[in-house]
Amino acid sequence: MWQFFHKLGSPKWFYGIAGRFMPWLLGAGLLLSLCGIVWGLLFAPQDYLQGNSYRIIFIHVPTAFLAQSVYMMIAVAGVITLVWKMKVADVFVRSVAPVGVVLTLLALFTGAVWGKPTWGAYWVWDARLTSMLILLFLYLGIIGLGYAYSDEKTAARSVAVLAIVGVVNIPIIKYSVDWWNTLHQPATFRITEKPTMPAEMWVPLLLVVLGTYLLFGWIAFYRMQTEILRRERRTRWVRELVQTGGQSQLKTGGA
Amino acid sequence: MGSRQPLAVPLLDPVNSSPGVWHAMVAVLRRDLRLSVRQKQDLLNPLLFFVMVVALFPLGVSPESSFLGEAGAGILWVGALLATMLSLDHLFRFDFEDGTLEQIALQPQPLFLLVLSKILAHWLVTGLPLVILTPLLGLMLYLDGNSVAVLCLTLLIGTPVLSLIGSVGAALTVGLRAGGVLLSLLVIPLYIPVLIFGTGTVMAAGSGADVSGHLALMAAMLVLALVLAPLAAAAALKISLSAS
Picture 1: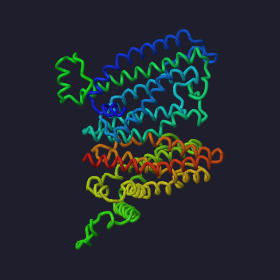
Picture 2: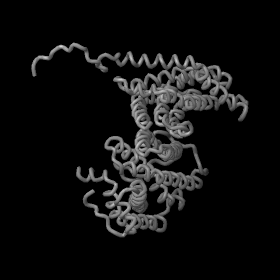
Picture 3: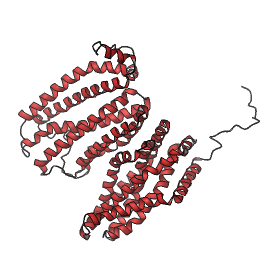
Picture 4: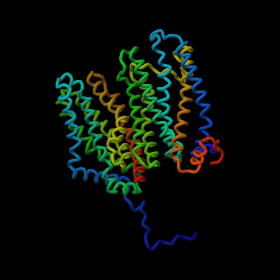
């Protein structure tokens, strides 16, 4: 266990291991989300109140879920950067923050599209929407601060502090629909209770959520590999990798 | 392992011979206050900014008393928030540039307590005058007496939170040449909850509801920021100092 943790500190080792996981993440993620989306869009029953317009939930909920989880992952990676000074954790933060921006934008966009037929307006200044907007600003702040420093170590540690401070917003987003009386409907999934939807609706939704997580894993690994190559471009192993055209299987054992 | 010989020359012990934590905090506070008083322009600028931003709304949107009475609390809160944010860049900048900050960080006293002193000085110089000026501006925006009182109370609890949260952003960007714009990007997302609760309290008071719950929530924010923000700001300052 600890050996694995220590190995994570080596970008070279991580590059190799990420490459092994990526095809599986991509395959399983595509399979699950395609199954879920096809099932949800074509075969799941209509909502008795919202008709067919509710079906955007199969895109909206996974992106919104992931937008929040990605921020939590970034914050955890920030703690790891500050405490163990692990390079890979910072690589994760910097490569994943733009993905978080896209996910938050997608969640806001699909929410707006869903809001028009249900609430009669694209945008409402509601607690959940506003706090998602704050999340978007937090992501942009992390990216901006990361680019502001030319020294990578300083950038890594500053971004880590900012990410950890921003975590206060996550519970506010999560519980905004319970704390304030708002238009947005309460949480779809709870660990402690049975979902309020019929199984034909929530099972495909769960499939898409799981699939999106896996796809996120693939994107994260892909971007991290690129970032590692960029940062380690002067090392010998990267040069060898480039010279052989990336064909040779990297030894993942020692590092 | 014999008995220790008394030393002829007393060793210079930086920890034992330096003043206590309380003493050092008071010293930093007095120094910052004195510097602010001598730089009167810095003292006045946030206040002038506050007044001008507030004056823009009746001119730009509507001078009707119905609009101003409803939006007045929000206008004053946004004005106070922007004025605080504008003054944040100065919180550590000058001390960082002339090396004072490095000396403060080298003190044996914990840095976060000295940073807390600096934040307190910042609030006394920018936040408190804003609160004192609020009743006047509130009357100009046709707020009724009860709303003005509640507004002042929320600002009294809220502006220290703004200074505390802002100190983290200021500490993160102090080493950057063009930190000002980035600072607002970092700080505003964290200010929004304070703003929402602050104006929400005044709205509740305007509709005749009991606001003690709202005020308790704001006080909880203040306590949370008071405990955590100096620690984060001190950590960020150390990063900025090690980079320069």
